[in-house]
Image (cartoon, rainbow, N blue to C red; front, side, top):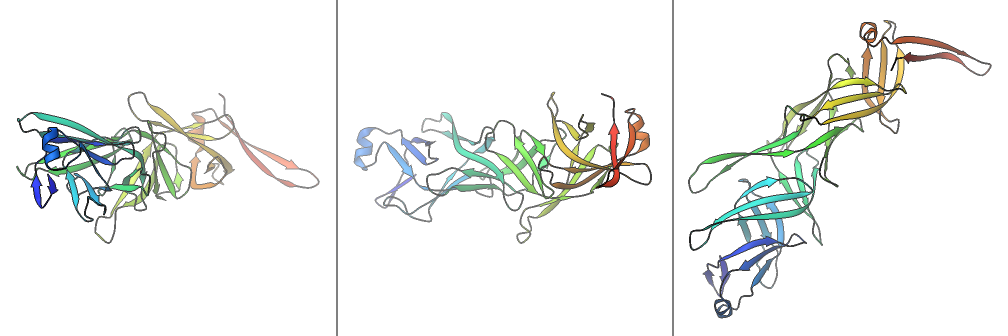
Length: 321
């Protein structure tokens, strides 16, 4: 519907998005009709993208010669893809002849986590980018992938439908206060969540690393706390480092590599203090008991280092490969 000369015109056409993520409407009307109302073949709209509470796509219009600031275009549809640094929105509509048309609006940009650990899409524009935020709480499925589930209501029929977005990727631990999730088919998209380690002392038999985090805004009562558990198996490296091997299902396996500092306890336990590749501590210690190490035929040894300038005890671990 187009407002023109204080009247509303029902103009048949289709929406599209250009390379600058600007919304366009191509009129499917005869040239004589367009001349009558002094309308071009293509109408461009400038504004800011967002999702409304019913997960429809909205464009809040800017002030121009042809637009009024504060007006809003609501495009009803659903998100169907979050892959390859795009947000794909599917729009269905009936034309004047009752034929169904399906259009795909592709916004380009990248996915990220905002300051409140919510999933957001940054829409690239020549000026400042738009932030399209998924306001709800995301989950981790059985394959340790991030999923986001949302509910839509058809305003005409009042029926509700549930859709799930899958973010295929893998986890990385590079900081003591951040837990990262890298999207597999994207070049710039990743989620860096603000977290707190749930238990800094781990045992390899449990095969899990747990983090606590909050998602959402406390002031708006959208805040929820979650425990994120990463499940996997521990593996020694030849250089006495550690890897945490995660199975993401369908034959997809990724490892998280750690640097380590090793020391012994009075109970003859071997403790690995984990750090990232820059040797920055991650606040995680994993303890290997004598019984567990026997499964690997591992031999704990001590070497006494003595010289004129230093004296101390060097610990190490021999593991057959």
